[in-house]
Image 1 (cartoon, rainbow, N blue to C red):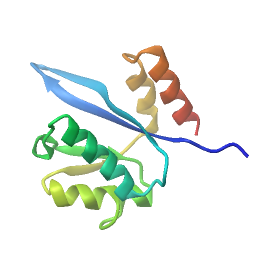
Image 2: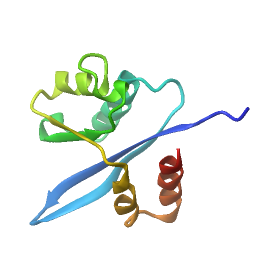
Image 3: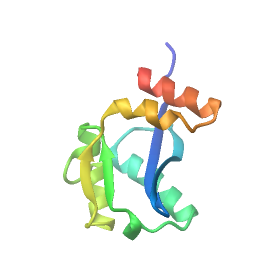
Amino acid sequence: MKALMLILLVIARYWNVNELEENLLLCYPLTKRCTGEDIFNAIQDYFCENEMDWAKCCGVCTDGGKFMSGCYKSLRGRIKIVAPHVTWSHFCIHRQSLAAKPLPDSLKEVLNQSFKL
């Protein structure tokens, strides 16, 4: 049986001068488990490595999975601890096609594979 590799994709949307931009922030394989804490730790590690501050994050959008949207041990719960001001919204998977436009071909393939799953 073929092992399934999970990929965490984090897309950032931000204002650049007077224009809203959207770019891939993080593409990270989740090799162990896929809990809210694992996802948070991957994002937190990236933030620390790149000296990014949660205070500048104003919103998070994810799917409705329990490990993403629960109140305590989920990604949402963990982010609320470090950034209580962050708002939460539900992800619409069809944004995949918009996010893929500016990506290099190799990353588009990763995004397309994750969309199929």
